[in-house]
Length: 351
Image 1 (tube, helix red, strand yellow):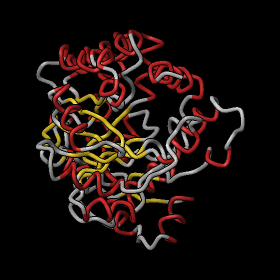
Image 2: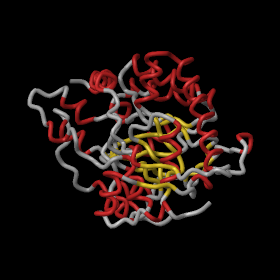
Image 3: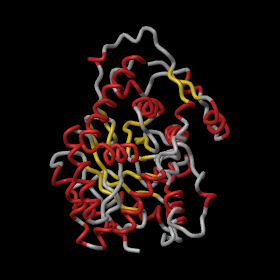
Image 4: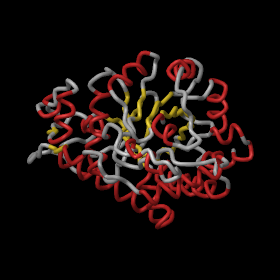
């Protein structure tokens, strides 16, 4: 099967399988503040993620490209939305375009439409330094995502089976590419052990992409005759992964993603330690069902409601939202406790 056909298969299966909504955000509760001393007009959504300055913590996370005209149109539409909303956008893996130049326009359209926007390039951990440079140049990208997708590759019928040397390749890219490097998962979460290894080679931005949203094991299993269903429930939830990374690597810049769908999820992800939040599957479904206007309205509504939540907890900035008290309960509490993380760090802090 060609890469282009596989890209469109992924889109169709992602829409069909949907979002699991098993991110564990229901285990996180804000401590109510009856005297927040804030007005909605006080709220500022701008944020910093490492060297990146973003006007909103919300961005359109990596989805597609390299699937011919269909993915060209999707990326064109998403880029137009990102431009109007003044939010960042990431493309899907650019390996297709590096191996077939005819696919490059399906990615380049994002920069063509969104001249001055924040755009993330994207490649897998198999990429070389030379490939990473070409991917960044293709988009005049502001940052480079290196995605980790071991489970997806194992389940993918034609996927990779050898993952040796990935950390060394990432280290070389970090030391050779002039834009910030973001290492992200693809829906199975980043553990504290992985986060420490990445920090040791110079990675300072991690997108946890936790379990609970689009499930690439289910997507690839839909393309298999002999199913590997044991990977369908594999992974670290988005909530647990954000906390594991935050509490294990000092100074790490965290992007929360993985099944995030509404402003409450976004606010909780930031309060747990994220500086920005990537949304992919939820935005894609809205775009495919309701077009650009529908997605524009959804992002505008989400941003407004995030401001209301920040007002309620007394946080006027993203930095303040990262300091408000919250309580972690349920399965997440048990997971984090067994992993040696003291959840009272969150429940007893004050703004």
